[in-house]
Length: 243
Image 1 (spheres, one colour):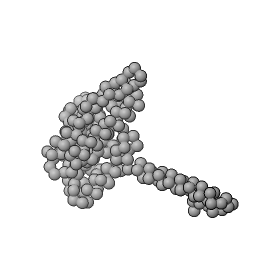
Image 2 (tube, rainbow, N blue to C red):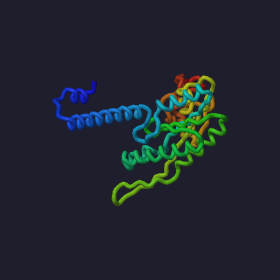
Image 3 (cartoon, rainbow, N blue to C red):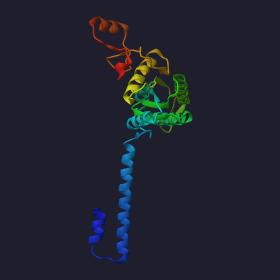
Image 4 (spheres, rainbow, N blue to C red):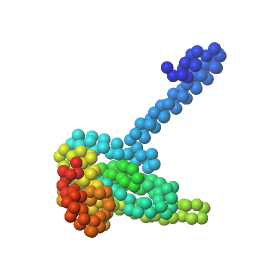
């Protein structure tokens, strides 16, 4: 039993006014508890900074769509030069930058029937209804293009900064039986190629390779040669390696 209700029932009689005051206090406490529980449920499926759905929500959305016979493609986005923004202007500006990007992604996704999710840091994932690869690539290009409107941020009373958001994107289309982790990992490989070769958005194909050492890290040719000579398997070459 709620402690406020216990106190109300066991307190010495204070007349009708005292009873009503205690009842009002109990209602306020119950409303506050209900609000806190609702906020906790919201946080379990949303990113606190941008308000976008999070990785858990993305996985559920993908799974529910697949079960309903509506497969979705995934586009993994990584903001260009975000670390430079944070290092130069500070985390407050970096956070404001992320919030603006989140708002623009959500709006652009609504226009094409897609949804945007924040995975963490400067990484976002878009889930788009899949009909054909060319349509997905076209829609992702449109969504990414919507980010490029200049963003004006005030640093203090006398200084401001203008940022022009941009992002690299890797796309993976689903195959029969693909889990969310499968398409996300293949989109990650496509994103690596987009960042390495300056082509965005980039569509995943099974012959794409990604360095084994670190995501998105471009290995120089001398290091690749050393890895190959040593006989280590340093690259993933098949879609099966993504799962």
